Length: 316
Image 1: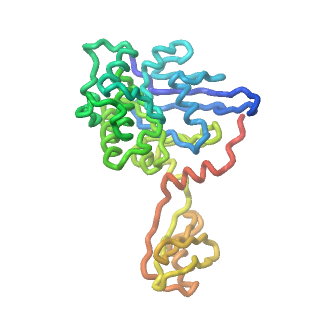
Image 2: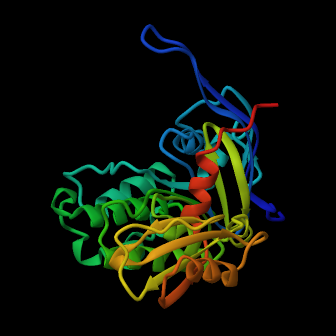
């Protein structure tokens, strides 16, 4: 059987929550169209309440969609729900683990729920890969928050799914544990596992993801390779350190300015309209003597803010 081109496909996905006595009808997903390439590390970003969790819960079978079509590893979630759910592992944002089980027992129970035969279980392999081998017999309640988070990743991988969804996996995890987690995730991806990541650490998404979709108000406002998404921004910044520290940013005609630390200031310009030379000429024209300059390219945070602070496109 040939492998699908896309690990996940959503077409016209809509989820509407009915009105209650205390709240009106709410449309969480407004016709989501999304294709996640097989073998990619795919970032799913958006502000709180944008619809990311609803989308993930729909994939996991925890939320019933109102309309639309979803395929996971080529399996329709309506026609083949068990097969579709078997193709994904989901690491939820909330830590859910029985405090009176050991990590080893937790993985054994999870594997049993997925029907993995005892001879095919990889309990100690997973615990070792995630740095939990020495805690295999400890009670889950004795683990730190970061260890519990890694245990959730191990539980999601017990049935060896081809797609792994990580919902805010590094929230509350210290730097070293975060690096260890990402090393394991990158190893999984190198073996062919498709990774879907939601995170509020935009620098992580920028560094790790091949492609990023940004959801805002239940709609996809961008879905592009990370490099293409970053190229959307037509602004650049020049950080000027003057000979005499500034108490406030100078007013420069045609440019936006902002005070930075240490008495420096930032000048923002549009690449199609101005250049660094024109910025420097404006600074000198204001009677300022330049000690040092540095240029900054836009990062994912700039793109994210630009796309999520604009009105959402009207539904067709």
